[in-house]
Image (cartoon, rainbow, N blue to C red; front, side, top):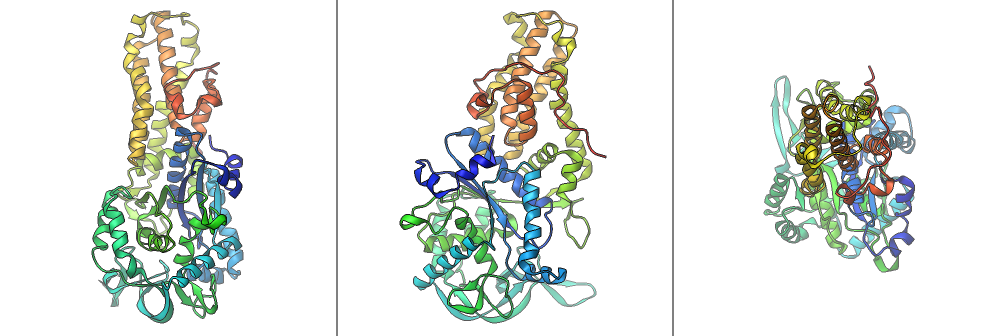
Length: 531
């Protein structure tokens, strides 16, 4: 399994400089800590952790760089801190710690937690700004548009819609993309010549349909790029936004929060790189983002990368949102879900299981339902936990023959074949960015094992059948335990420990070739649900 201590070493420039193989680099969104984490943040973290663990298991010789963190500048933070009577940095220190705590409790093994208030990040942003300015891609101009405090960005006329609501006059103006309220604003800002990069971006995305998934986001992106792009504001007057990185050589302006945040993916791996710009792991192999920030990561950041002559991200996964009883989670509605409470009640493995099983296709908004989480938790315990308890019970162990014949094993051949094929089946799903069906494939094997065990009834069959049942079910559990490691690392580790599987035989290749050691009977894989 991934270990913080090991992977943190992989983040140092000397390690990367001496590594022939580029690290597999994955990022979550850089979370905005204007409030404590919610279930959507946990979803992004767990999704990224699943892919990070999968790639570490599949290629143990290739380092994995896994970056998450907090985006700590901007007007929302400034106002939230003011409301709490705290300096912005002190406010961010407390909230950022909650995101670290959530990652720790969720068994999320990031290798770098970046904070945009770090000195190293200031250096990185200033470097990028100066490079773009040197290329003539930044200019000062008057900018008018629809500004959203919630989204911390401007929208054009084509990106907003006026909504007439009963009892509200005039009509409310909102962003088409996020639904956030916007207000018309005009100010003198620094602008980035985004318009110069439309053709290059269109060519890139048109040539690589899997660069943005799900495919609906890719199709929408290509359609947007058919029309001209407008230059965008990348600063705010310091008089309106004081909490942020000052624009180099102009203390009256603050670097726009989204521009600042996007550069963090470079900062996190040591940008600007020494030795004439030798990369220490770039480009990102997979970026996990929410569907509401697709434009920032697929248009704005790639345009900056093109300007800097850096490779674009290899794949962007834009996941859907979580709802509560089919309604969008909102603090005003009082229907948000506390991830810490969910972990306390169900245990992190069951929470990760539900997030991956229900939300692992990433296409449509999915519902966080206490009833459904309970149902999935019971299913997991019944299919996996009870299988281990049943097959290692004294009723079977006490009557097993030392060996069994081929005819005794014959009823278990479909199970053994399904177990052997499981790592390949999972790899196929994971390579297609389908976490839900990958996890379901493991559950299918475990269900088949339960059925074979029930059909064979080894507690009352011959000693030879008991032996065949025992060997076959334990093998299916061994393979399933290896394959479960990305999804539920804690319970997978507990299962493999109970089976006596050596830590050296837990990589992906051992799914097909491996051994079982001294089996510990009666191990309870899941904690009792907290009431």
